[in-house]
Amino acid sequence: MKSSQSSLSKVERKTVERNRRMNMKSLCSKLASLNPSHRSKMAPSVLDQLEQAAAYIRELQENIKALKKKRALAAHIVGINKDITDGMTVELRLPVIELRESGSTVEVVLITGLNKNFMLSDVIGIIEEEGAQVVNANLSCAANKVFHTIHSQVIATRTCFFD
Image (cartoon, rainbow, N blue to C red):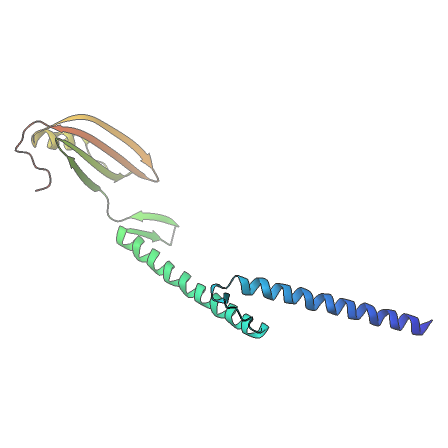
């Protein structure tokens, strides 16, 4: 009886090992198929596939680092600086004023912080002094910013907002 148990366990071990090898081969094939440089006609060895996959992962990690640096640089250029001590975002370049001229219409976009006090009537007064008539003005708040959009119609031809 002992010999039949040992032969049975030997067969089971062989089956388990064969299944393990087949599973590893399948997983290596899946990993190799994710590598864009894997498209060769001749199948590389498993070791070569693993080395190529590792190289590709390292390349992706370097790309991630480079993209994070670009994002940080872009955020710095825009003027957003994170205050690490209290986790709040500090706006450095407010207020922002944009002028868009299209024919006889001028759109003024003014972005300020919630804690920045200014008089909208002063901005409207400046627009009217320059020879434009305010048609409408909109206000909206988002992410600790106040967005003012003022649409105006130029009534005096001498006015040039971009000089």
